[in-house]
Image (cartoon, rainbow, N blue to C red; front, side, top):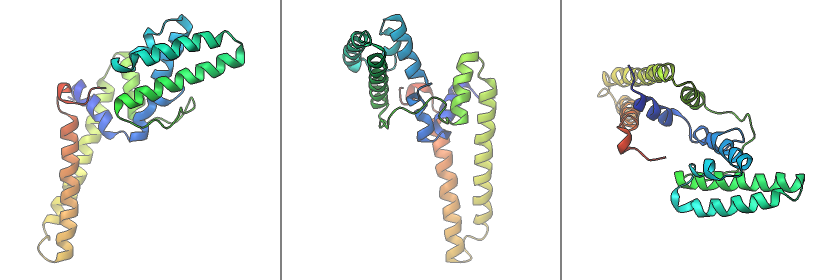
Length: 191
């Protein structure tokens, strides 16, 4: 059985950096919170996506956005877009990640990331945890098998030795990444 903390860590580990950035899509969770804030006229739903030290900036942009929205449909669209971009940019900075612009709704998101979001919505992590545990186990086995097979001839020639070292390094580094991702949440990067 894969624990929920491990499943969350595995999602982060296995997803590419671009996929992990699904928060920068127009249909992602950050923009959804921004839209909710604008609909309610209350910035609170958006604030959860930024660190406390950047809250004042979001509050100020939000107030300006509300004022500009009253100037007509074009102004509303422009103001909303600016608010979305500002919120996502500041959120990404809080993650230590670069802001590369808002991606359109429907932009491709890594399957594991989409399934992680779906697990949170459904309240059930088991299918996600199981599939990630299987993927990690398969990755370990594949790298182990390659390294173990290469070890048999590692001392027969320099080339065979290099093949073993390459397989060894790939195996060990993969295990290190998995082990790092599986550490208890308190020891992990805080989102």
